[in-house]
Length: 435
Image (cartoon, rainbow, N blue to C red; front, side, top):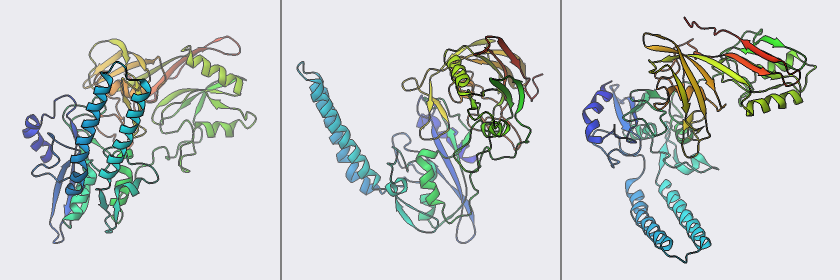
């Protein structure tokens, strides 16, 4: 709170609430060799065009080594950009010549980036020094790796001979253009840029293991079958049970695994779609490959109607509408998804307010596309409903309390049976209160 209060006094000077200027800040509680404790504070990247700000930890890189590459490199890249603009202004320039030039410029840019990354080294709690690029080998470090608040804070603590005790990061200022961060909300370090660095830097400290979502014990009777015939079945998936196996060996318990054990005479049994781990509700399952393909075709043609119900954290203005915000996975922080008008896939959701209470809203959702986390992002995004689903550990305002679930449930599904041609309409009320 003390750091956030200090930001309130400088946010106008730093223009943090200008569009695109918000950023992650971090606080690291530390202890000195004499037993006294205190904290360090840091920010990701640059603030107000500067790497160094009085009272904040410095960047993790060697400034003199970086400047030797960056100052000349920036001038070179600006010259190449001017050269390309001059080429484009010529009437007789060929597409092939531009492509060759662009490829050479990109190669040079990558080489400069590699040289800049060579100015970053990180020490672990055991005192082991590792270069940035070795921490991501055999892959390449993403742009901005090493500039986030957490690595900067730990690097400075080790420089001063301080012992890290606790670390927290929060967003402050205007939301990013993707809309997936909120001022004052605490977030975990991103996986893509920070995970390899922090795994090394924290080595030697007593660190809580990362939570393994999806490994909780779920009653063996789940999922309950709601409808069944010789071609397909519909089950009610509980929150906390995966739809399909996860990557970890500890995440093999799921709807697909359980149903295959229940139906040993249906080796082609397959889920026609999925529900998020934290989402409960109706899930369609085909008993054979032909039915599965037919159901997936109905999904692609938008001929299967699904309706969800959710409690949202906030008051939604208006009574109904449609959200169209394209989505893609956040490659730096999987499994989160973000809004991206350039590279995102089309995603459309219809919504209707069902009830309002103090500080929250019950909403019915009808997704017209089936993107990952679509309803969760559309609910939380400022250009959507600006009210995240209660209990959402990825997009919510606050982390869910122990035992608190995501209040999102797939309550209705309706479709024309792909084999019999009969109309099938099913309803399963939410296991959480909707009154």
